[in-house]
Image 1 (cartoon, one colour):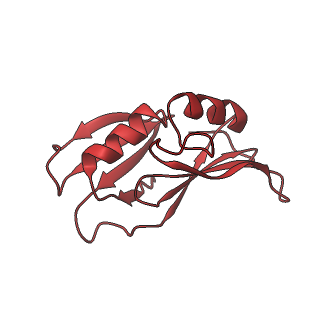
Image 2: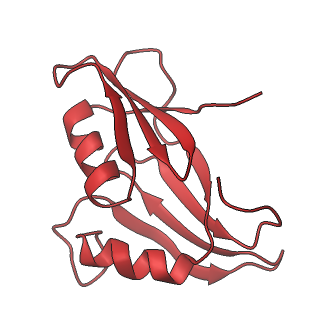
Amino acid sequence: MAFIPTVRCKSIKTSIDFYTNVLDFDCVEHAGDDDPSFSVLMRGGSLLILSSHRGDGAFGQAIVVLTDNVDALFRRFRTRGLKTPGNPDAPGEVHEGPIDQSWGTRELYVDDPDGNTLRFVEGFGIGPG
């Protein structure tokens, strides 16, 4: 059984640009740039749906993305324009991280342009997808 989260966005084009150009997702299916629309993205073998259709998901949700190296991702995302305190005009924003959690994981929280949070998690006990 597979679960495929649907992330709500206001602009499908803006979201695809952010997820593919900054966060290393690949767009594997795209229904068009005119909103409302949807796209299917893939990262590490796992799927994610972006949708600007009313009723598909809610703004402000959190999605966990497993990874082997949070710090390397953080460095790579910053070079691709992820907004950090020193880069206020970039798309998306670092919400928290990288941080060692008391439960044994290392995590990086990134907010997409619509306020959804992607939690990149290292050390979850199972490998990334």
